[in-house]
Length: 156
Image 1 (cartoon, rainbow, N blue to C red):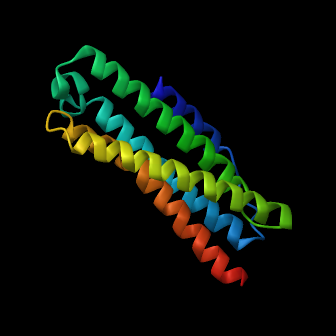
Image 2: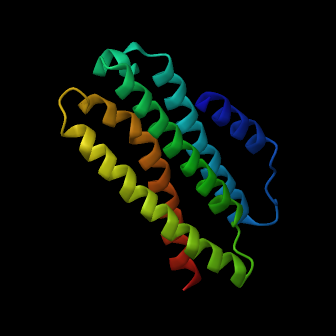
């Protein structure tokens, strides 16, 4: 389930230790932990909230199944991209720079896809509240983009 994937990633993250001699590594790991913590909390709250129950919002079992599957795919893709993204910090080689560029492009494409899906949900009054469940995904990507831009400015 989505919750077990997030819990597993959260567990793995807490076993990572930053290189204490490298402030970029420590800051990146701290930011990654903060983003993951926010996503975990949101997923937990939404999975235990009646207002986040797609059946209650849609009233259609097939639409509920499709929405849940799409949400799982977006969360899984986001988590995988962000896991690789944060693993590139600190940037110690040109290989990391190239990898970050590719990941940034993939994350941008995913961000656009999620926003298009969110817009399609928001346009349907019976599904409008479901769009809110996509917020943790876009917030996590926003934080990664901010960090990426900030680090690029520092490198230039």
